[in-house]
Length: 112
Image 1 (cartoon, one colour):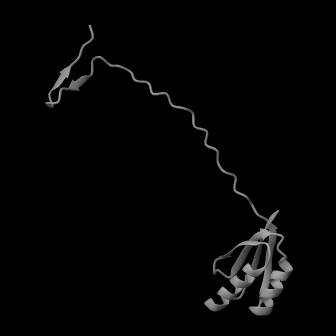
Image 2 (cartoon, one colour):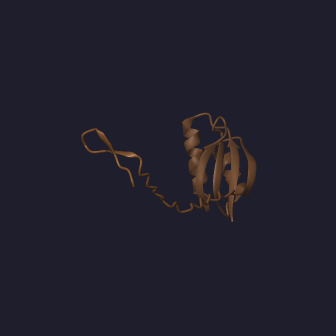
């Protein structure tokens, strides 16, 4: 079962954020890593069989202050099924409408 782990890490520079990303990717079972939060100071890791304690420990050891925010299952998006009904084209013949004959002069067709 896929799980999503969100970890808050204090990253002051781009170098630390890249290093945190490399650490998160190096753990077995990780499928995707992304920065989330208003200041992009949280890392969201998704995958199967990820050890959240090991992830937090490695980030604390190599980056600095790290806080485990949440661990939970991934919310899968259900595809919306749009059932379209076949539309039948119904052409109704109106004998009193006029047609152009190519010279921009309308002529009328009447059914008697």
